[in-house]
Length: 248
Length: 278
Image (cartoon, rainbow over all chains, first blue to last red; front, side, top):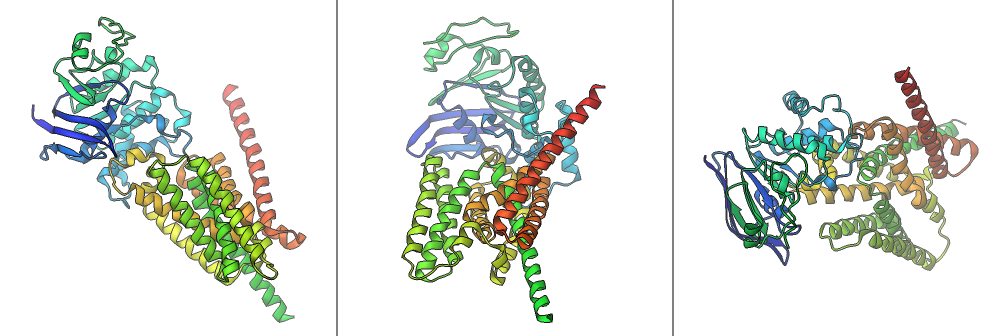
């Protein structure tokens, strides 16, 4: 599988505060990588680094430009910060995922609107095109934002703790959907729920200032502590995995 | 006789134009501040600009110009500090609010002689708007319409989710500054209409009426302008015939429209519910 992007010896942070230290990571086509680590460990910063919102203070982020650039990276941020009462309807939210292909004064044409409509249908949100987020359930809101991330036809999908606010009943369905999407695009998913995630991802990156790459979905407490990556291993639902105790 | 009716005609035209421009500017800017929950910030800008009015009187330049400078600077200052995240926003706005009022009062008090227009700055006076006021409000209407139609989606998406917007544009802060400056200008120029005390309701009531009927941002803007215009003309008429202050009459009629709409939509909802149940 060909390489999509390469992060090499990157240091990054906000102002004086360094969040990521000497981080290197290669993402290839077909990857489905879980990014785990404690809160404040740098998971979100790693995703923003890939998106180009956070710039490295040293080191490089290199895209394989024949396959990918910033415009075909889909992004599902932690959506808890969004005001669900904002007067913006589902269809327009999904359309905002096309803005990276538009000029700032750009208009949405018929093809764009059809594309948004198809995504809405694929995600089972038909009938809610004219609803605002406050009229939707947690699982539906998450699908709207997934739709926005998918609108631009990404080759790499970045998900920031998508398991954070969704009801457990939707969780399994959501991960199965991701597995389906993974056939078409590489996925990088930040999570602090290693237990559930490990039954879907193909590999792990553990981020706690430093990054350790783990090329298989099985990860043990011993490995986590060797990585200096304290994380709570929780699991629930239909997970065919051992439940590990809390790691000190 | 003829002279008198022409004068009256001119007076009515001026009033109607004032209502029109006020509802266009307040409707567009108001939808933005209500959606982004910037009502308190706007209150801060309004009262900070009163400081500019006072200094304008004292130093002998146009109070509106003073208010514009104060309003825009304080708005940009607050936006800058909140982008840099160096601010507990609500406290800072509260301080700015009081500082503006205090500065205004002090300088107006220090100004020698009688200041006849102070009441009109506090409570507005559409009946005394000048041609210059109308021209500046008219220009602002044009600028706002162009700005919001050309960059509609960019402005909308930045105010909905600026973190996501940063993934496709590096101009997020530029747009926030421009929009905030236009917002401040809208507030300041509408102070002539409704006054420092009431201008905030001119911006916030129409979008709140509109949002009872639609949740689509573009429609909220259009309906806000329409409801704002109906409220302003009704209030203007009341002021004309009953000889009461226009600013207060306009706000009063807007609140009445809001109450009627509220009752109307909840009755419709109940009827719909009954229908779907039976």
